[in-house]
Length: 75
Image (tube, rainbow, N blue to C red; front, top):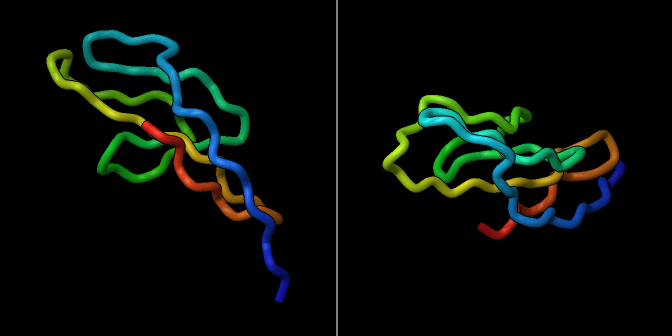
């Protein structure tokens, strides 16, 4: 059995663009993203949002053949 290496958590994601119902986060190469309480996704775009609601987003480095997923970023 081969043990995978570890990755360092990325910095918290930052806003790239937004509309009244969509937020796109700036790309972090090799990362996946999630909104608080949701599942991880490879897309940095989040849709179906409300303009009068505050959201928290996280990033982590995705699992690879050789590396485990990192811890999530700080919010």
